[in-house]
Image (cartoon, rainbow, N blue to C red; front, side):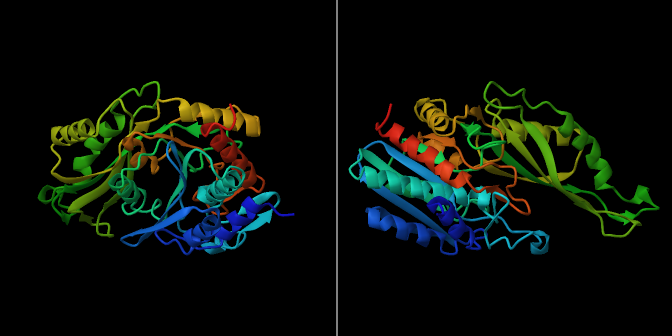
Length: 379
């Protein structure tokens, strides 16, 4: 007999919801929750579909948050099976979104379904905040829903985000925060010319290399007890006309700082630009802040999640803040306790994305146990 969480994960994975498209995933979820007297509110901002589904009244407000959008598949011919035809093979569930993060969403749904059926008059409120705009710009998704909640005076106390946090086995890592992300788009101005007459040109590549060397070598901070040290990483570099005998007129480089709470966005910008100026670089630079670092120091949700994982899976979780950004950066500033717990992350965004086929149901068990702990149905 097939497992309902696995079957729901497969149903969601069959929808080609490449960001920012939802392709009906939210309809599937809303239709399942409606008979349980969830209040489903569809929120569309720009081209993005969002869902706020809520059950109960009073406090606390516990939220499962996640995203239905997935990244592009890459070359479909490289997949062993169609990425949007989920299949169980050799004990694994294969398909785009298996790990990131439709297994988690399926586990959200079946966990709250079973909880509400058993405890229809539970204290407090339980809600799902789902968006189709996490893998893309993340402008019209969770950030806008959080603003909408503020206008209604709703305060989230506890939030679990279903990002794929596990490493080797389900539940072995819980994220209690994330680093900030600061992007720079730099243009170095030179003078184009014939490569045989460098004295008549100004090569932006040569101008920038000493500054790049220092940017890479600089110790921006030493991290702290909660975060690793801040790092500078170049991601895209372009210069030249495509021929061998022309000195380019400009160099373009994109770079990123993943930064800890030991530094600030303003401090990173000032120090980076000071390096460019010290090396005499003629440049234009645009900065974009994707998110500030956040950390859940309060222990109520963290301890409850550690207990739920231990009871359900027999695993002792490690607490971590590594990895990329998540929508937690929009929820944590409201004062909510935010943690992340989801599938094994090894295959996220890869060809042949997969999770162990038993894990969606196991994850639903963890989520169900966590809800019971938070709402006082077990100690």
